[in-house]
Length: 369
Length: 83
Image (cartoon, rainbow over the protein chains, first blue to last red):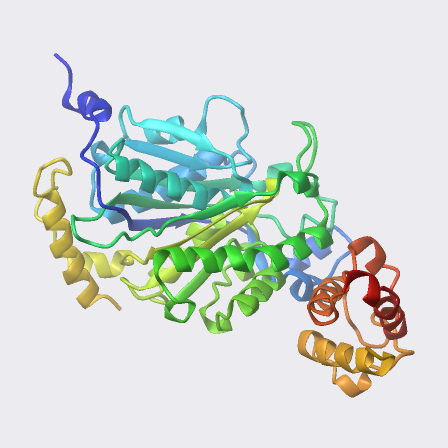
């Protein structure tokens, strides 16, 4: 006899009107590395690092800590926050460009360690734009009905690919993971993940590269700075336009935390006030595909973004890939437990699931911070 | 566009991007040594100069423009060709 779980994994779901982020989770390794720590090893200084990239401290993973380890913690938090059980997840996408091994894929391992049995699972490499690409792919899968609930994770151990003696890169890159559970909106509800504006400029791909498995990462800082500060704000504006949201309505602009100078320049050109710009990089460094969900989850947790409000995400990086979309901010974990005392698990495949979600959604919004 | 107009425009750009008062942006000043402007701010200034004057300053030429006069000369020389 076939188990319910394996059948549900292979049964197409009814198409959904749209998708939304249900919950978020983040993880940073324990080891805090300050600018002074780095200045003790390479020729740099706290003042120089702060003024050039805006980073005060960052976290480095332990020697045995893997991309999958970090993904499991962040993914587990997002899953717990969603109120779903592992069996409700049909698809796991891990965005990463720093996995230790080419195979097996991180996503299948992470799914198994989280107790998610038999989901679709794939890794996605769009470098620092990876999370936004994965989020768009998850939303599409839910819309067409190849999945109902998707766990999307960005997880990176960038330090494994950084020359610890290269002062141009070792001060910027760091480790961490961020995750989101993505599910359908009820019929008639507007999508909580807006249409993606994405693209790439492969002709410029040599600007950021890890040429082979024995190489460290290389980046032409000045060229990347110019590219990012001149080409990305129209992409971000396009994502707002496609979502029908004016830039002035955004409660937060959460770009990939590449370099504070870059994201401040993009925000300026886009017309987003500084106080609405996510600046998680200050204490997280550049964690590639993990930076956006890490920043967004922390902002939601601290109540810096109101549940139900609109945030603009913009991923960009190597391959000169970029992707932007407007998302509706979900509840932080504390508000969720206050607002939604749950009596048992809701069957995600039951016909009235959508209605129940809508109801709790509205209650949540009213009681959010 | 006269040299004086370019200088004035450049002063406005540098004041906005680097916070250096426009009247301190005089021809003999060195960006790094006198105005304390770093390489990333130079890129921003080059981009803003392109918007304002219609002259592209590529990265490989930007590194050779070390003084305010260098930029004024570059813009003057290339204004006709790329505008």
